[in-house]
Length: 80
Image (tube, rainbow, N blue to C red; front, side, top):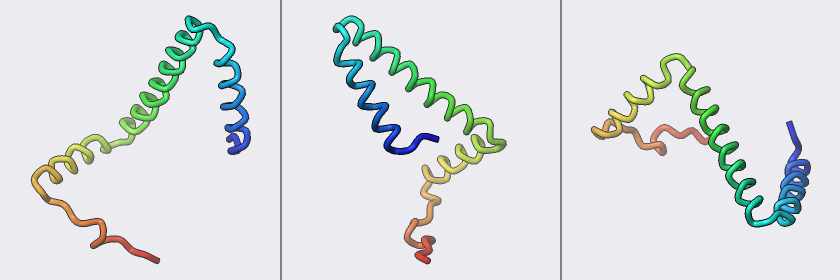
């Protein structure tokens, strides 16, 4: 796992490179970054959907919320 400083360095390096590109190549780079972002989101979603019973539990929770069967977070929160 990368440290925060490594992440900052990578972002600065990427920004420096992006600033050197022509508008056409910058568009390609932006489209590619959007593609990578979508892949990351989709992979995370798929990982969640692979958890047995999670989708059914989520849908049940949404239905309960829709009909008002909810509990205030403050009523169950524990400040230890």
